[in-house]
Image (cartoon, rainbow, N blue to C red; front, side, top):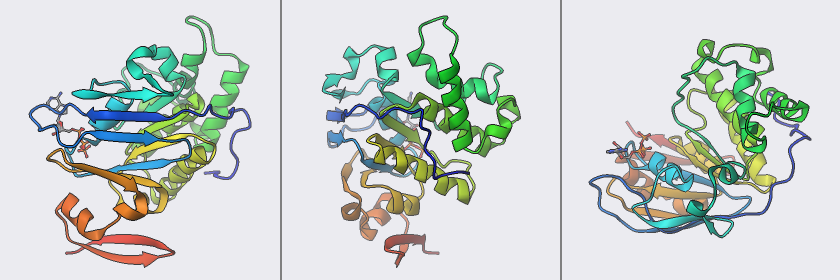
Length: 269
Ligand SMILES: Nc1ncnc2c1ncn2[C@@H]1O[C@H](COP(=O)(O)OP(=O)(O)OP(=O)(O)O)[C@@H](O)[C@H]1O
């Protein structure tokens, strides 16, 4: 996968910040816990960590405006998400879902082009520039050779890369990704983390739910730890990667070492 050449067709993002103000996500039957005050600034790479069922996906969907919070609000560029139209929001914020629902037959190229839908008027066909962006995104995600394939014929990792290519075609300022390295082999895991880091370096804000502590330690600038009881803490990654806190988060003893200047966490047997 080519990881060195960003598409020249993608414009520089506007500078906007995603903010959670006194936010409590809505998980039925769970106590409210500590409200979130988050500010996802341009250039930041946030990792959301927590065990299964802690609420990572619920948080991501709430930040994307797909799910109402129990209380508090999410603002983009100073405006509550509820005051933005779906179209205005989709021009600025994009999401990679944890699971894919491919209800209609479509090729890889057609799926990547969905990323342009917020920018074209209803019933208008995609133009040459839209197509060029989709092709560049497919190339970036190592998918050009699969452009005409039906989604239903792809492997899990190939399908995951199509979702990322669609988001790259959309080129939002805010990238929300639910387990973006799901199904990916080691090389493509690194390539996708590099892609997200590259977007942040362009001035995008990135939030990703991760299960791999070592990817989080190497690629995230900030971390948010979500505990199953609703407790939450967040801050710069260096200050959050405390072995005892991570052991408490997962209920799993860890061995820690420093490798190439970053901590590495291995589960104890
Ligand atoms: N509509 C719903 N009704 C009842 N409970 C729900 C609903 N949606 C989610 N939940 C519960 O909310 C909790 C948080 O779910 P969520 O998918 O956000 O967790 P997660 O941290 O992303 O988990 P995983 O690591 O397994 O993906 C889970 O216990 C889930 O069963």
